[in-house]
Image 1 (cartoon, rainbow, N blue to C red):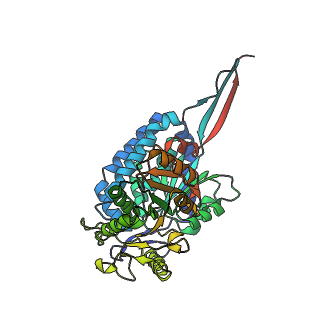
Image 2: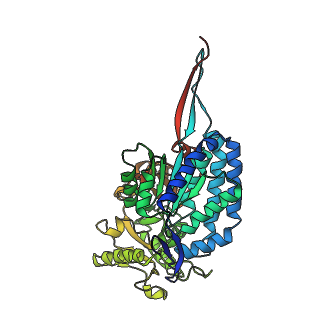
Image 3: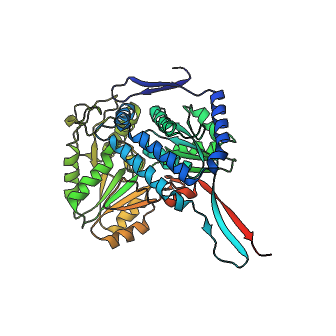
Length: 463
């Protein structure tokens, strides 16, 4: 389709969705509506905002089955796993709505004779959310719901791979009775996305995506003096100590690495295992990975779907091939996955050992079903290797020693530190990254700080 998007499903390579891109006039009209809707929404009580947002969540959840099937078709996640996204969306949305009254309450500056002093959080205005395809609802909800609850209006641009997700958001808010212009979506080309970021109507940009995408956002926003929230890539490490519950660690680290075909910004991408348990861990992980069923994501028996597109799968194939050529050993025979084939998004999962940090597979984000496992002598070596990365989104340690976990976590450069879990966002905790994994914060009460600006009230009551 000329002047529009075409969503090629990884299921069978067919065109699943076609949509025209918004025209210049439609973009201008949408931004004008957003600006016009802002004052009334800003004056609405938090209770009224919560009532409408909760109705939207209810409307969204009611369509869970259709939404799960659409996710499978658009980006390839197995239908058996897709409903989890709706549950996660609901958990995060309801949590952020529930904490809004306290998170947005005025901050009392304390008593001072003759004065009333407080700090009020005020909405920024128009929030432009740019959402990715890999977790199309879980990523978008992190900014959309709290932005609305804070009194902002929202324009959502979703990935061209998952355009129906933006439309599902719109349907839910429309059914909830949200005032016109308070939430809108636009299907945009990359150049038009940059132009919207640079438009004077936009007051904040919430972007989730790749590091190059984050650079584009920063460049488009340069000189505008607006806030930009960036949730970017990761190369998240896991460290399995000698005292770990090995069976538990094998099962959960493997799931953290291969769920969603490894297409998760906070998925486990490299593993460091203490020498005392290294052999047992590697054998257990490889055996578990061999049990995955790679296939059509619409088949409820499928546990590993295709990657989002052939090019993404080829990138991972290249990483695996290069690592093997440089001395790594592949422990999983691709022949055990008949659906896997070259020049397709269907890729066999792989576990690599004898890897080093000279290999790209241990340095750069794979975003696919491959994991490298290295043996380490002690905690200090594990910390050094975990920090040897330009990324810092999450990291995990698998151990029975909580004090050691806290001590190691204090030394690891990461936005979230896990003990005995991974690949999860707790809406009560700040979601943030360091280094190339981005900046800013969503979720938790701190997430509201980035979607509001402080205004100080200094009132002399006695003259």
